[in-house]
Amino acid sequence: MIARTAFKQFAYGLASVAILGLGFTAEARAAAIIDNGTIQLGVDDFGQLNIPGPPAAVGTTSVGLRFLPTNNEATAAGCLCEGWGVADNLSSVAAWANNSSGSANLILKSFSSTADSATSIVANTTGIFEVTHKYIPDARTPYLYRAEVTIKNTGSDAMLQAACITGDCSNIGCKLGMNLNRLGVCC
Image (tube, rainbow, N blue to C red; front, side):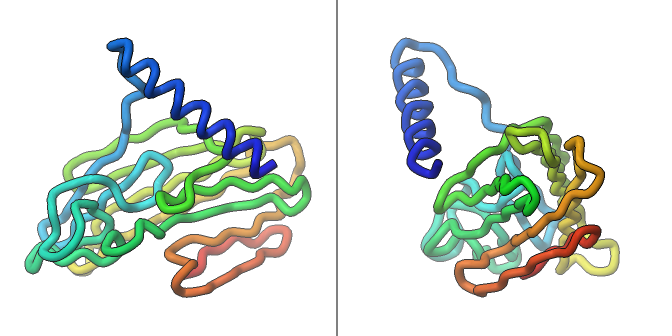
């Protein structure tokens, strides 16, 4: 399955290069750079962080989580490893998004943004679940952004048995498994 997915990604990438070479445009990228004047986020199509943007104070031209007063970058420096994933334990269906290792089994339903907020809604390719990432400034302090993550059961089964991992889990090493009616986020 992983080899087939990797081959599909390669084939789609090759097709995109061929189309661009003929003068056509590829699918538009919906990503956005948002900020509240203190914190800046680079939100990619599927809700993960880290997208191309202006240079940081040191070392990267990607924007993930940036502190604007010093222009220091937190998640994009060194590795674009921030990402998320969700799986349905009953059907063994999984989907994820990460700019370092790629994305799998996701369809972008919508992406919207303003100067200080962004919302990504994706569905898995089999129609079992939908994931919404909503990034908004935290009203309590300019030093925080809220990342509201919602996992919605869109399948025919009454209960979605989900396991979810989000954040830079390659560095933190967190794992979280949920029971039948309990969804959660780690990292």
